[in-house]
Amino acid sequence: MKLRIAFVSDTAFPWHIGGVEKTEYVTAVELAKKHDVHFFSFRWPLMKKEFRHKGITYHTIHELSNEMLYKNNVRSVKEALSASSVAWQLFRYKFDVVIVNSFPYMHIPVVKLYARLFKCKLIFDVAEV
Image (cartoon, rainbow, N blue to C red; front, side, top):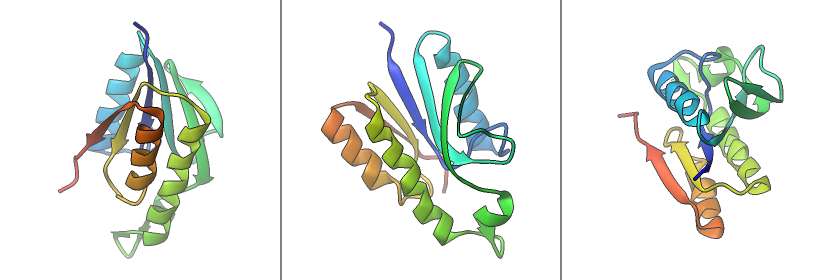
């Protein structure tokens, strides 16, 4: 059975390098071999608004850079709030499974609402301590 799977994260590998990003990317590429995989994130330099890469359909909004993501070596609260706008894009589609990075937290209520309304499985990736 082919599933429609969505990943929701503020960052995306290989445009933003990190351990969680790499893990999400490897998982998404493997799942895309048998399933319809979509990735929702901020638009990092060199990313288009919507495109396919290694079998994954990317949906991006709000152009972002590392300088914008971090203010004084701390994650930007403004950009964390913007992350919830990434999650609102889910409502344009129907997914069977949504995998969400639990950080920066502010998008979680939106994703949870989506999962309840569309009765899909919701998986939280809790990689931040």
